[in-house]
Length: 136
Image (cartoon, rainbow, N blue to C red):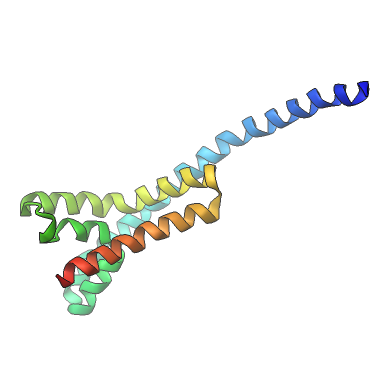
């Protein structure tokens, strides 16, 4: 029995070393996802400049790509036009980096599948809200 008691502290020490060595790598992944979100935001903004020129189909595409920015312009929310323009502009650039940050933080705590599901669910709910409010 004494040999089992001696082996237990060594196993705990080894476990602590593994978890502490993984922490910097996990934060590296978070910042890499934020950086990928910044790159995605650049291309989304460039596409948003062209999308309204495509007619009604372009407006639907814009709602699918940047629903958070489109939410700011919904009259049902009662946001003044000048403030809505500013909020939409900020959200247009911040949407994908925020998705990357959310994905990275949730990935560290809940695993990749749950984190990706949460980000996709957030985006789908925002698209649904924009579509519903546009019909009213």
